[in-house]
Structures are given as structure tokens and as C-alpha cells.
Image 1 (spheres, rainbow, N blue to C red):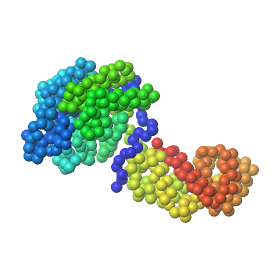
Image 2: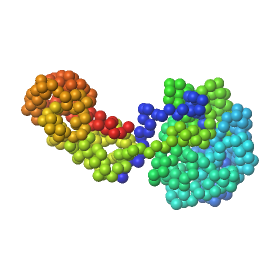
Image 3: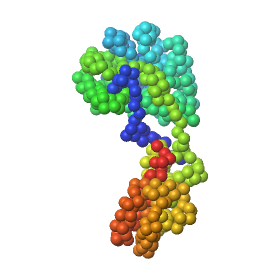
Image 4: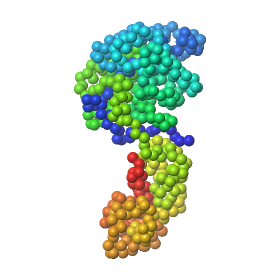
Length: 471
């Protein structure tokens, strides 16, 4: 088993989003339409809804309807939706609807208004219910039913997907279903990215719960519209500044008709919209527009090799010589916890280096002894490994004068007699003269200091070798 979580992502050098018009940030508004799709015995569910409503300490009522929570959801459909619809149509800002299929089937007037406004309507699943304990086959059936009902309601198949209350299987199942320009059931980045499942790339456009109005009804959330505005403004200002500095990002804002559609909360959202309209370099798209832009600007390119996915033989064949003549290091790394974070030069070096550091002193000494003398007999006989040959040539050690060769030979002999292993240095970091200077300085080290120094140089050589073959 491999550790499946990707804790690396784009790392310190994310791609330039290249948003249209040179925008510094893409601000994307999502309006979740869930009213009429929530838990309710009228919908065939086991009990009432208890999630994201203004009832403190709400819990499901098995076998009963909860009149108060039902009416709060109804507020979203009857009043909140229209308040938000007016705001976005008057400002002419596009919106992505996350539409629960069963909710859309109960909202003909709201659906007509969404379509007349030209809003994207993505799928928010079949019903607004919890999926964490749902069997994969059942969830797969519900995904298919959501698509069917969505198509009936809107006239076209959804091209975006967000379950929300998802299971561990949701993103895989939606990817397997296919036909989606994007999936948004992640919260792990400020930019879209490609995720491969069963050999098929799926674009992921991460969503948000931090800039989400659901925090109006959570313990550590927003107490009023002003607090919501301030959080949105601070988020926008941070991302806008990063974009000005050459690293444009995406800002997602999640809304609910029954939550931010309330008057006091609504004012915070309106104030934020007024604020961003004062900036020139802002792109306000639908999520589908982001997906289409990303697919064009950053199409999926399959990596030449994914180290963490290789079988043992290929892994050892590729990386067994990174530590000179020490295939056992690669074997142990392969048997350990490899993950997407180990698929870069730095990441794989960490995995290999960790095995080297965890080895016994005798094993590490054997690694040191596996290295050839610099400009020694093996080099003269052209019996070095390909990597060692190239490394020594990079510093001109394959073209020494007679005097230089004599000096290297004398130093090699004295060094090995004193320490019991060859002098090791990352040749690519040095010149011929700096190597000689290090040689003459390090030969005076104590055995303990020089063993540690040589081990550090072995690790450095390994990193340089990996950087030549991996990103």
C-alpha cells in the first residue's frame, strides 16, 4: 500500500494561472441550492435535517419532521434566493449554482431565473444528505440519478460536480462516471490541478469552507455581516497582492440562500462585492469558465515517471545507483511509505536519504567505501559508473596534468590510510581547485567529523543525481 494523500501539490513554484485580462485573482461565487433536497421524511429519509440551519444544537429527529428547520430551508427558497438573485443580476456577476437534483426538481421558478441569468448549474448530488457511510454501489447509483434528474430539470447534463457531504469514495466515483469538466470536492489548494484516477486525468477545482457563509451557523464562525465582509476582504487582499507579485490565484466564495440570504448577513456580502468592483485586475467567472481556461492554459501532461507508483524491480533499476553501488537503499525506500510527495527529486531524495540515515554505521561505511577515488585508477581505466564518470568530468578531473594527478594520488592514498574510505565530495558543486583545497583541509579532520562530512557529501551527490532525472 502507498500513502495516497498528496501533501506536496505545486510546492513553492505554482504555475502561473494566466487568468484572462492579466487578472491578479479569479473570484468565483458559488450559490448552493439545497432547499427541497435536504433530509426529510417527506423525501423518504429516516429523519429530519439538522445541518446548516439557525437552530442551536440541532439533531436529526428520527421518523419526524422538524417544522422549524424545514421553514428555515424554505426561507432560502422563498426569500433568500431572490435577494441574492437580484444582487448578482444587477451587478452582472456570473454565479455557479451547486444544484441538488431533487431540490432543482422542486424549484421551477428559481431554476428558470438561474437559466435566464445565464448562470452555470453544476450538480450538487442527488440529495443534500450525508454520504460518509454510503456504500460505493449506492453512491454510484445516486450519482447517476443526480445526473438524470439534473438533465431533466435543466435540459443539459451537468459539467461540474460537488457533493459536499461526501464520502471517501466520492471523487473517485465521479471521476469514473466521467463527463465532468471539473470536480470540486476538495479544499486543498488555491489553484485547480489534475488528479489521475484509474489512468484518467480529472480536473479538480478546490472549493472553500473558510470563506463560506456556513460559518454563520458554526461555533467558530461569523457573528454578523461585517465580520464576514472583513474575512472576505482580507482573503481577497492577500490573493490580489500575490497576483500582483506574479502568482495569481483563485478565491472561492460559498453561499447558501437560507444563510447569507438573511438581511443582516447579506449586507456583508454586498459590501464585499462593492469592494472588489473597485479593482481592475479581477476576473469573476463561473467554475466552468475556470475549468475551460485551465484545460486550455494548463492541459494535463502525463509525467514521464511516477516513482511512488513503480513496482519494486523498476524502482530499484531506476534509483538503485543514486547511492553509489548501494541498491539496498532503494529497496528499503520502496518497501517504506512512498507517497506523491516522494515523486519529485527532493521528495525521493528524502525517502532514500532517510534509509541511508537509518542504516547502521557499518552499512553507511560500506556506502562510503563503494565510492571510487577521485581521479584514481578506476577513472584511468574507464571503469567508473556512468554517473561518476560524468561527475568527475564536470570538474575537469578527467583531464589532469601530471602534477595534478600525482597530487590527487598522494592525497587519495593518505586519506584512505587515515579514514578507511575514499575522499567523497559533490564534484558538481566544485571546481578542480576547490576540490583540492577541500581535500587538503578535510584530511586533517578527526575520524568522527570526517565520517559525518563524507556521509553528508554522499547525500548531496544523491540529490544532484536525482535532480538530473526528476522535477
